[in-house]
Length: 358
Ligand SMILES: Cc1ncc(COP(=O)(O)O)c(C=O)c1O
Image (cartoon, protein in one colour):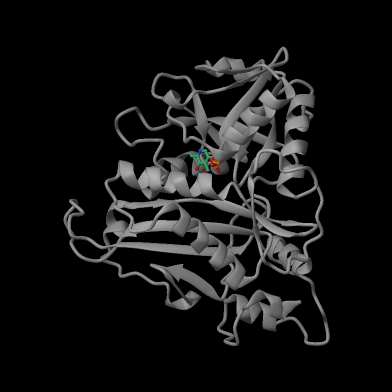
């Protein structure tokens, strides 16, 4: 029902409230209907933001439209933020956030690398995410916690600049369009070691991701895979890369300038659980062309099979058996249709109405 979305009573053009109020009152639409309408408004790979009622800011829930920063804030000029992207899934018995403590620990780790002292513990940050999701009453949704350096000094040195922590969430569906992706190797390299730390999920790193993604898009690909500075496979603009050859699952180690993906870790855990041999090693570019299966992992991409790389088809072009096995298990756990045997789910009290499918 519309009123489960907490969209508030204002109806400014372009806001979620105005979208909700554009639905005739005699029509009753479920959350599922609204999410599918919202997705149709994008091109299947875009991430439109749909305002919700509340955003968490430094310990308090504030109205969505009040969550603003000044143009002279440090983060605007120098990319000084650390953030997370988390999914909350609708499930038969309610809704659950996927691997919440792991995400918030990574945000604390990113903050530590950048000498940002966050005044919140892991438990407090996890509780704040749950509080935000429950206040906005939306599932499935995407959750975006961010810590940023705010308004204070214009110098690059952020000493004395206040740190602001926000948590927002909004309804959201698929990231990579379709069942399998046609991708390219990017002409842009991933971050070189000891330049921009790739284990930190900082806003500044996404300048590189933007170059990779925009080039892929301009050339008609769904995504780009960047090589590291030594020419080994690194990762997509927002995904880790896996490949399968002769029954062995390969992915790049953290030393190849990748983010330590939570989904990457989930897939490695599932593969070990199934007894699939796993190898983390530097992967030469050409290994991807001769792989039996290739797929992306990421909070946004989940487990997305790759059909071709640089217009070279991967095997017969269809998702392979190991990809499917791992994707089905991953999606089954996330959607609450398979046992949460690794303790990955944090339940939230949300009136989820989205039909649940694996
Ligand atoms: C550059 C990059 N690599 C990999 C990933 C996948 O990480 P995760 O599975 O934690 O979403 C992401 C997404 O956050 C990313 O931005």
